[in-house]
Image 1 (cartoon, rainbow, N blue to C red):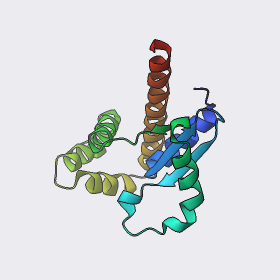
Image 2: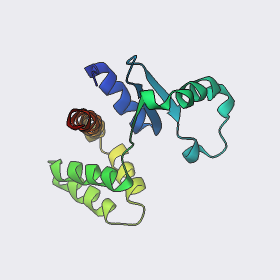
Image 3: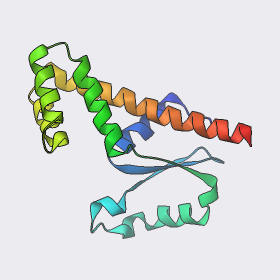
Image 4: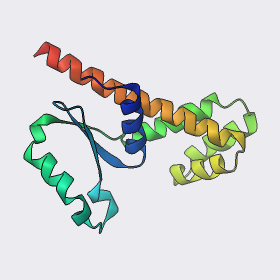
Length: 145
């Protein structure tokens, strides 16, 4: 699978937004669709053409998996451990150990000044790593078969 750095970045950003990303193994084209199971009542009509195209040739596509909740939690925990500001680090670790850890973590991040941008950079880097791991796993499975 041959993807450019820009394509990998695009897939990572779309996965982070909760989208489903399909990579056409023959054409190299990326198609992104909302995860309809997560959006409740979404008007699928505007996506109908892409849905039909993917369904008609699903074997031509590699579907990138989204991170599971526990993986997202691990990214937040890793970031918290990397924070040099001890007060903020304690707040983030405490937030992760309370009910609704995602909401509490983000509230602290949103009110952390410069660390907010550092968080987004950290998370983006980890999403890019996740996409790259999926590509490498696919390439290895093709090579081994």
